[in-house]
Length: 329
Image 1 (cartoon, rainbow, N blue to C red):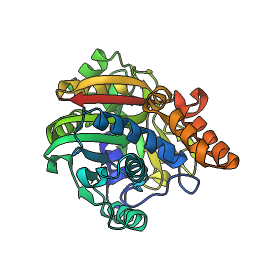
Image 2: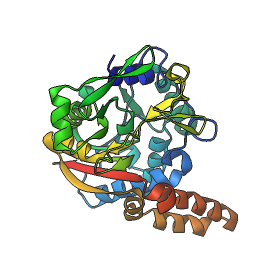
Image 3: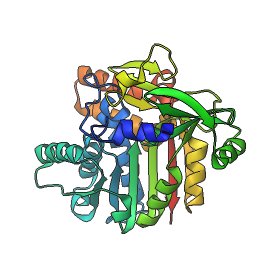
Image 4: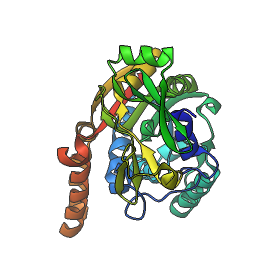
């Protein structure tokens, strides 16, 4: 089978890696910005609140998270919005797009424990189920979880009994490689359809997404497996795919030029593409940290400051992760 089909089965097939709830952080296979600090979600919510308070987005805007995992990001954003204007919990809609039933169960338990009846979360299996007037979409690390093809010099990988083989690439893949000056690397599958679904799900919206990658092709393979915070290159001869299949996370660096192309072709306007560090600072994460300093002990403040440093330091997450921001009006 094609590698994209193999990766789809690995992550989302029966008993696939993401079919059930997976812990993130120390007990899981990897860390994310969400698991690092609640200030991550607070800063995004701070930007959203600014858009609402300035009249650029209505108070009835729907906050939609795509792939919410534990629900922590949505929860952190709701807490910050509540701290700024309690009435937003009644005027706004809060929606989560999630396909996996077991993950939805874990999310519902989290929101029930933390918010009770104060917040109503609407769940949707697909973006095509939405028909919103105004929306603010947010996601963290979703583009790296799309299936991909592995391309090299006019050939792509196919998997036969968990072993890598090569076959001639299709005309479509050859055209993509030529357009993007790709000789070696990943070709994501599904960005175009996803962008069209986002664009069709609301009459006007902003879309903000965080992920790791670059706005150009590296002409090298970044495909890799994460298992208990250890990284295994897919082409490592010592790695047996059959042993990792469905039990570990498989991912790759995002080609943001591909993402931007897909969204612009779907009728969306690129607001900004920038590093996570620059985006979070613009969203107000430093100001939020200083507000926290006024009410917290010095020990508490220093602990949170260290977590914020992880999010914005160039050598940690700050430059490695990028933010892509689109708008449709």
